[in-house]
Image (cartoon, rainbow, N blue to C red; front, side, top):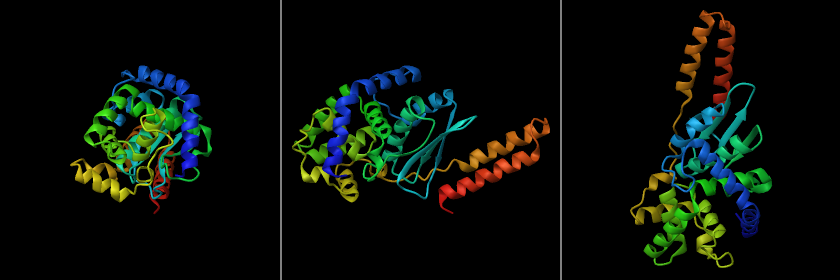
Length: 267
């Protein structure tokens, strides 16, 4: 990400933070959680909320490692498919990003959560979804408190402070940097080069040096497909026996699912 793109993001945040904050509070009320609490397991918290809105959440490793999640709403169920080929921190951010789309966005879209993607911020709804995700996953009161704590433990080193925060909140490095800039915890015109341009290997090494969990930078590769196909096949068989649908329809649905799965996996 270049510095101009970063400035555009912060400008959008300044202009829209009150509206997005209101959305965060409304979602938390819907989900039955405190809007200023840290979310220790975002997927466990939001899965039931997605279900209430008519969406199933699936975890599948994609061949494309730039797409964080796919979200689609058809005539029946909607689907949120998370890309487990990405590191855990990116998947966590993708989940929160998709909450915005499901609750406040359009009906059909593809979402990306890689901050380095050159085309990512060209659509206003993507700015909004990321601002929402940052506010939800890094609540202001908590974030200010933990920033101060980790800054002291890091002897003021910006990059190390951000890495401690990304480990604590389980979110991408760039998401933490942006949140720090939004809340003016780091001066916007004084971001150091080594803070802005840090490589993934450097982050992993620093996590290791600080005795923090390096696995947050690795993909889980979790794959829900076999379970989903088993469930669809079981219910399809039952519905066919009850003559709600015919067996040919069930087989066609399963064939389409397998073909889509193969495309997602790049096979």
